[in-house]
Image (tube, rainbow over all chains, first blue to last red; front, side, top):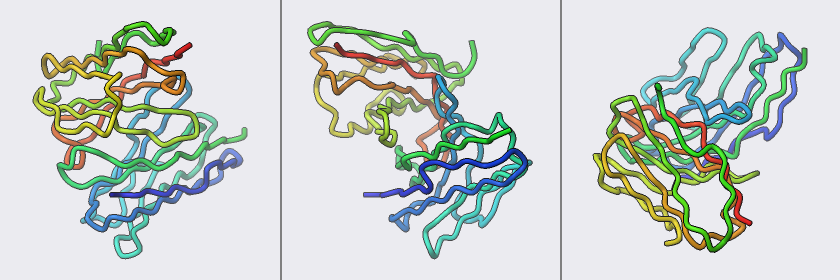
Length: 112
Length: 114
C-alpha cells in the first residue's frame, strides 16, 4: 500500500519568514495530493491540493510543488503570520480510490 | 448549519457502555468517511461509504459498527471499547470518492474510554 512520510515533525519560524514542509510517497500510481491545516479543537481543513498533471499550484501565500519522478511534494507558505500556526498534514491518493494516506503531520509555530 | 457537523463533541464512556457518534453533512455529497486520530499518529481511515454503501472497511475491530442510513448521515456505534480506543474521531464527506474530489472534515468527537 501507499506510504507517506512527512518532514519536519515540528517547525518554528519568525513572523514574515517562509515555511516549507515536505512529503514523499511510495505509490507511483498516486495522483492526488491535498494539504490540510488543523487548528486546535477543529477538524482538518483543506488548504490546497495538486494533481499529478500539474507541477505547481499557488493560492496567495500558499504554494504546492510536485515532483512525480522523485515522488515528493512540498507545501510553501510565504510571509508567515501567527494565525498560520497549526498542524499541517499532507496526503496522497489515487483517483476514485476512496481513501487517502496521510503523513504524520507538522506542527508549525509562527513567532510574532 | 453548513458543512460537516458532528455530535457529541466530547464523550466519556466506560468500557461496558454503548454509545453512538453522529455525523451530518449539509453539502449534498455522496461519500462519507470515519477516521480515527490518535496522538502522535497519522489519521487512520476506518470506514468509507459511497451512495450509502460501505466500500471500505479498514480492518476495524467489530466493537466499532458504522451505519449510513442516507447520504447525509453517518453513525458510528460503539460498544465494549478499550482504553486505547480513546481518540478524536473525525467524519468527512466528499462529492465523490476522494482522489477525484476534495474531502471536507467535521470538527470531530473527542472520545475518552475509562
